[in-house]
Figure 1 (cartoon, rainbow, N blue to C red):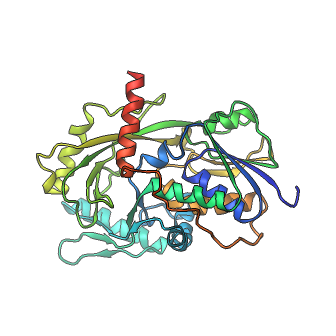
Figure 2 (cartoon, rainbow, N blue to C red):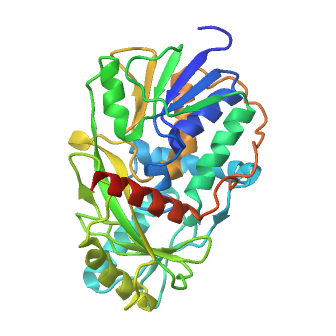
Figure 3 (cartoon, rainbow, N blue to C red):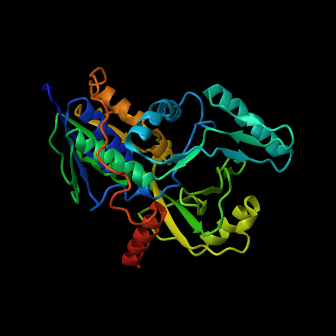
Length: 364
């Protein structure tokens, strides 16, 4: 490998952009290719904007390791790049004896992960002070601008249809990661779209992120505020065979009653906006496929990254750089590339809602 290795990154979501910045800061010649005409239009721009602590993540799994590592990496990066963040905390309130047992288990899980939580003496609710909210589009934009400032080239509107050049190729293609892997003869995993639908309300938000007590099947519907003072409720979880960015008519009823029970001001409220995000779920239980490809030693996967990708992105990038053999290279001092909110006249959730409505209309 040359002194200035050439690295091509496929995918312009938050994980690909974090990788671009990490490689560029270590002196690599970085080119990032994104199929859409703008960055972070898929899962990275259509999520909840919540940065998680990992209190409920299964100890010992790679996803958990990277969430916890990112919690250490993220604060100085957010500060240096001017990315907004509000550490509002989260709250899980039990509604019966069975819920109390689940919360006790979550508290023990958090302790195993080294995450601060508190069980309130009065109602047995679980408080997670470290949970917070950000603007995921601003986060992605700040990573992109900083990567360019450090010498990376970003090209949008480029759909990869054959193996690309580079000493190293990073597969951070989100929903297209399985297809990109197969271009290199790697059929070791695939992904499918898991739709999460959200509703935005012009209702004063709760002070904390309100989390339901999870069941064995689902984590359930959340209620949380945005940085601009709206309230969002969601998501659903609908497994799909192909991409479909529409919001189903029945999704409102699936979400609203549960959300109103958690945050009474939502009772009778009508959504101002709705949007759907598609998370790249791994087939056959694949999750956080962050490794070198056995089929082509140049290819490194950062694939099948679920909804925690925004949270773990910086640690995923650190892991990918290490897999490329550049982990010991000194990093240039982080230099921001401009205002992370530049070029966005609308809040991130409205950008998501309007873009996805346009896509759904095209498919109708």
